Amino acid sequence: MPANGSRPVNDTPDLADLATVLLRTPTALAQLGPEEARCVVDYMRLVAFPAGAIMLREGDQARTNYLLLVLSGEVTVDKADASPTEVLSLSVLGPGNVIGEMGLLDGAPRSVTCRAATPIQAAGLSRDALELLIDEQPRVAAKLMVALSQRMAERMRALDDQLGMYGQLTAAMQAEITALKQAKR
Amino acid sequence: MPANGSRPVNDTPDLADLATVLLRTPTALAQLGPEEARCVVDYMRLVAFPAGAIMLREGDQARTNYLLLVLSGEVTVDKADASPTEVLSLSVLGPGNVIGEMGLLDGAPRSVTCRAATPIQAAGLSRDALELLIDEQPRVAAKLMVALSQRMAERMRALDDQLGMYGQLTAAMQAEITALKQAKR
Image (cartoon, rainbow over all chains, first blue to last red; front, side, top):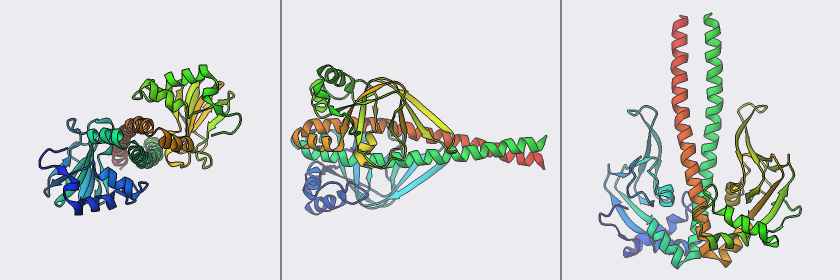
């Protein structure tokens, strides 16, 4: 997590309340009960980004092992496309969205770039904090992990559907190429 | 989980030992410690399939909330492709492979079909057993969920890469179509 000024979310009670509510929105981890969410927030740190800042950078290999729950502001998510100069804007996220959870799990390089479109407040959960949560509140940790996994399963199914569509698209394009080549003869 | 003849893995000590070893192979959940793996196996049930049986069927909506750890035999994984008559064979799995973990998490319809290429012995973990594990052994459950999530993150990154390749492929095909159309004029 960025070291600059990060401090426990609990230091700011209003933001801790907000984080507890937002952690349970359908875009985040709705499966958590209110007390479980509060318990997770106890382990989160507050991070702020000015407008224009890069919150996560695609390909980054260092300090990737944390997730961020957006508390306020707007985040754009981009991924470098086939052509490196071209960038595919994936989506705009806001309060109640979670970013970077795969990094929390495997610490692998970031797969997307997230930019602060406006000033951002976010609550971060690091791998170290997750390990502490498993140690101190294993039941809550297990519930958190089930909720995170369900989110990932949902996204995986969406990626699977996208792959299926690409499969259909390339088959159709291949048929068009074959037809065009035959017409040329 | 199929009701036919499923019984606790622990009823067969040799298979329980095998399941404990296989649960910790790199293709399964290597992050678990040996005692954690043994504890998970305590919650698993043994299921057997004859050669040719369908273990999971793509699109199935009922009884989808369990995963299977293959203990012996070979499993083929298929997904109905763009054309319904055509089937894309995804892979062949064997001892130490886990199938169906997304169903365990979200109970959503199965996304692939798994067939027993040979007689299969597998250890199943149902959603009910996972809930019991969370209740009785929350620390082990949390570790299990972290390991499962890491597996999913890995597969998600692979899917992401595949999508990127499809993006490049369709761009190249589109360029070819444009060139062929211009040559026709």
